[in-house]
Image (tube, rainbow over all chains, first blue to last red):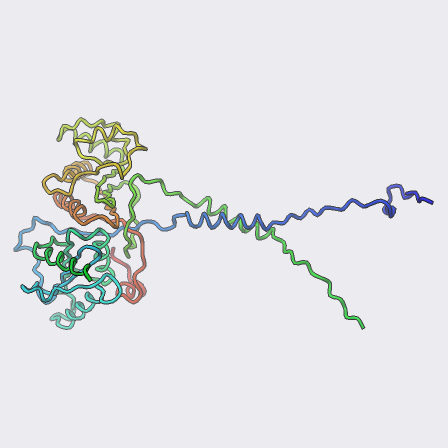
Length: 191
Length: 215
């Protein structure tokens, strides 16, 4: 005999009646978290946190008469010359006629210009007369050639502040030095 | 003897909290982000250890792009008007002052200035323009510009900025320097990207010992 549902909406339904499955209200949030973090990374990368900085540079006054200008001592002078393709050269004191003290260096890595500056600095310190101001005689002369780029100039000026060189000057290059740079640049490309 | 059966734990974790955090961070970054205004002149600046933040208003900016072309930006509109008026009187250029005031930067020779100003702002792009001639020592128009700007800023402080591209060649930089020097401007700042002092260098030691940087 067929049974009848007699419970009449009570708690227990008869075995024949299927209970409507109660759907969970929980949603899987994993994709949403994924999306959230994806957007976070996007905004982290596009946001500009670092403000551009500014580097001060004082130019010498061209109108000052030569006799009023500061004379650099030969022992404390270091001249840095910049050529094409990130080539860099230097000489100490005055350039010799046979250009034997015209040496090459690099911006970083081995034989870097930083080492050259530090060596020069140590040398100037060792021969200093005045113990209170041992770096008085150190003067770095920067001569960019027409082949070098803006980055090279900034790098060298930056090197001055990194190595705390107090006296440096951005000076026009002489023709003879420019030719030397050109020759060295060309010979550097060949091998 | 049967072992006591451990109730199987569900592996799903409640993601709600994590989701909350993610969206909190997201809203923070959305609100703090500032999109770079699309620049007409594309310039990638070199980096330096200088730690002073570049001024961002009332500046006079000279830009050198990667081809060595020179552009000039005057931030202050009042000064722009003064500069335009003084150039009109001294060089008799007939510049449209209203248009010049609206232009965000200048990048052409004096002879081409009027046609430059007639082009709409969106179409003034650094790669098409010729820039202010200044490489030639005989025809350095930036000298005249700087003179007019100097006069406009007479008596007040001028923040002169120079923003150069990594690849700009030295002659254009030198042309700009000459223009500054000729107008007795000995002090200016170069815009760079910040960089930390190399470890072990003197500057690094200085900053580690708490000494303040001069520049």
